[in-house]
Amino acid sequence: MVNRRRFLGLGPLIGLFPSLAFRSTQPQPTTTPGPTAQPGPLVISTWKQPKAHAAAQAVLEQGKRAIDIVEAGVRVPEADPNDTSVGYGGLPDRDGRVTLDACIMDEHGNAGSVTYLENIMHAISVARAVMEKTPHVMLSGEGAQKFALANGFKKENLLTPAAKAAWQNWLKTAKYKPVINIERHDTIGMLAIDKAGNISGACTTSGLAFKMNGRVGDSPIIGAGLFVDNEIGGACATGLGELVMRTCGSFLVVELMRQGRTPQQACEEAALRIVKKQDYKDIQVGFIAVNKQGETGAYSIQPGFNYTLTQNGQTQVTDARSYLKK
Ligand code: SD4
Image (cartoon, rainbow, N blue to C red; front, side):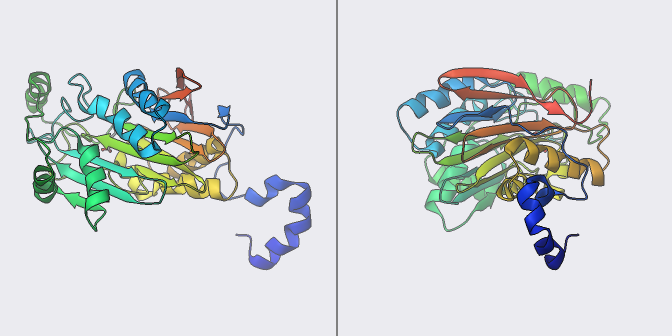
C-alpha cells in the first residue's frame, strides 16, 4: 500500500513517470492503448451482435438519447428465438422455467432492474419502466411481472420448442456444474455514447442455462453486470456472473477509469483481479468499457470473447484480448 505521506513524497516523481501513480499489487495489465480512441457517438456490446447494433444505430442517427439507443439495441436479441441466452428462446433453469435478468442505467445515474422475471419478453423495457415509474431500482419475480403487466407488457411463453428440447435432453443426466461454455454465450451488455456525448448502458440475459431455480446472476445487478457514470464512462460484464458479482466487476472497471486507466487497462485489471483471487481455470468472464473520450476496451479471461463496435456508421466484430491464450 502507498500511504498518504509516501504518496505525497512520490508526487514529483509521478510528474516525471505517470505510470508510477497506478502501481498496484495486482498482476499488471499487459497492454495499454484501447482498441479505439475516437470521440463521438458509438455503440459497443458484448459478443457478436450485428442486428442489435443495426437497431441501436438507427436510433442513434435519429439523435435520440443513449438510453433509447441501448434499449432499442438489446431488445433485438430479447426477441430472437435463436439467441439461447437472452429473452425469448433463452435456455430455462433446471425446473424448465425461463427467468430473465436485466438492468439499465442512464446518464444521470438513474438505474432500473428486474430479476427472475418470467413470461415477459422485453425485460430491458420493464427495467427501464422500473427506473422511470417507480421509486425503486430493482423488482424481482412475481412483483416484477405484476408491475410489467400493470404497465402494458404482454404475458407470453418464452420457452421455445428448441429450448424445451435442450432442457429435456439435459434432464437425462441433470448434471450441473457451474462451468461456463467458454466459447459461446450471447448475453448482451451494450453501452452507447449519443450525439450529445452522454453515456448509458443496458444488460439483459436469461442467465446460465439450467441454473438452480431462483438463481440470479450479475446481469441485473448495478455495478456487477453494468455500471455507468456519465462523468467517466461505462462498463458491462458477461460470463459466469458469480465471479463478476464477487468483484463488483463493472463498477470496478469504471472506478479504475476514474483513477486514470484507459478502458482497455481497466478491463484488464478487473479481469486480473478475478484471476488473482478466484478459481478461473474453466470459466469465462469478459468486460467491455467505454470512456467519456470515446476510447473503448475489451478483455476476457479465456480466449473466445468478442465484442461489437459501431462507430461512424461502421460495425465491426473483434476478438477481445484475453488472459489465457488459445
Ligand atoms: C449470468 N453473466 O447470468 C450471465 C451469463 C452470461 O452470456 O453472461 N452469459 O451469469
